[in-house]
Length: 195
Image (cartoon, rainbow, N blue to C red; front, side, top):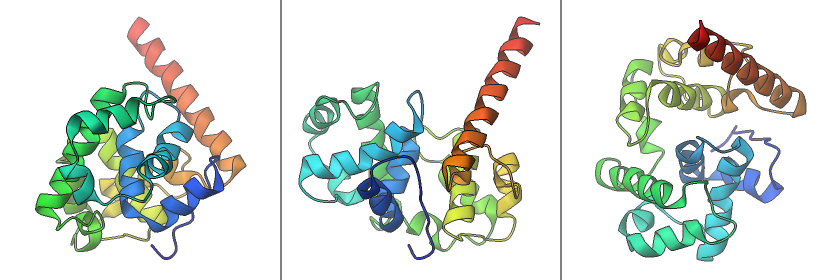
């Protein structure tokens, strides 16, 4: 995890966890939908607090499903949809446990090309094209995971100097720029739908 520089507007302990734990980052990406990015990327730290330790992917994969849902739903819930996202997080952890020896970093560690990395991420439950591209961009920009063609695989999210996703947030200014981009994209999508 050397070189990772998460600087999200979340508690310092949550950033510290994201900086050292590939599972926390993976879970943050999993949860990053229909809630604020602050909530999504703080929830892995809150989960660790509730468990009393930083979990492994294998531990979450083998966790009692109902108990995991209850932990996700405990106020304040880890997600707007705690049951669905507890199930999703567990499904992702099962794939990591089964296909990647329980190590989330193995998902990206030996990917030879950006296209291969993208395909691996896209195969995770709940990952569509956009979420997979954002994860590829985050890995390239913050983790220095840069197999040949990673920027192309990340689409617009991989562009140098873009401010489109969590992959581009390193300070308050970049957060504001990402938020402005998302607001504009949402307005454009709404206008196109109404046209």
